[in-house]
Image (cartoon, rainbow, N blue to C red):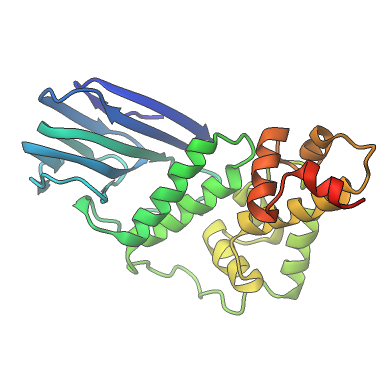
Length: 284
């Protein structure tokens, strides 16, 4: 997948899921530098902090910004367009770069530029999009092998937020949630595949809906997005399995889709308030 390039010295870490890559970048020095990006994916950048004394950023020579304070700003570049510029830093910058493949399995084919009139945005204040960026950054920090659905959900929501209500409906809006039949199908699929990395695209296909429609309908039906519901079901199954003292905690972690005991212990303690081993001991 395409990458943002720059002449500045940075430290970075990244994670990737099918159709999506996340990259945290931190400047090392304050040297003047140039930068650019053009690719066949959606590029979104979240500025955590940083300030330049001088410089300019533009998208294909059209949209321009000379904003100097990047803190809590959002950049969006539609596929195929080029962002470039130069900067004389006043203080170091930290960014979260997000690269979303428009053909990714979690994006409805109709959920493209012909439906969403997504305009280039440079260093704008977009609080809802920023909150999604913070959640994606937390996902990167966890580096979980079983977090595809959460990443997909957050990116789908982010694209909706960036659209700012300018979506063109290609079909009648879905009302009333999933409906009893589709909700039952979704519940059954999740129950039977808890030990797998369930993707948003696959779950939407199982119930016969486009991913972005499924996301909204699922939330209407269950009161939470799919990744949160899956996490809750995994934790409930884990509690039941912990009652069997013959089953190792690592085996329980794998059986409930956490990928490993460390991720399982972190998620369990965050939700329940104690570690799996302490929970098991309290059952006696």
